[in-house]
Image (cartoon, rainbow, N blue to C red):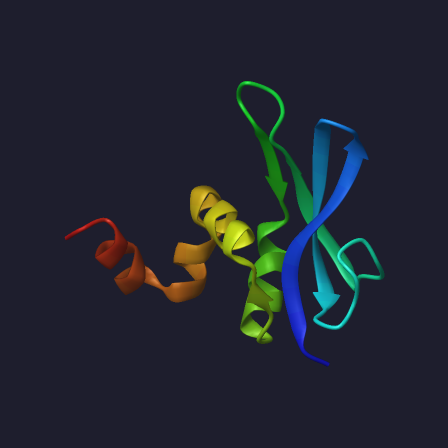
Length: 95
């Protein structure tokens, strides 16, 4: 099974709320998923982001590919730097 870390939409019209989930690449966007890793609420002025870092690192090390949006959210939380190691964190900071 090829796994992907992606967003699953919830919430009502014009009030989006997303779950960050690990799903099979063949599953629908809002279909079955393997595990929920966190939530993302972009609506408030200061968006709310909650990620279980330990489980996210586990799935990344197992080969799960994050979507572009999830990758940027992982960067904001610092999970992506932990996954790539300290050399990647230095390279992305421009040093």
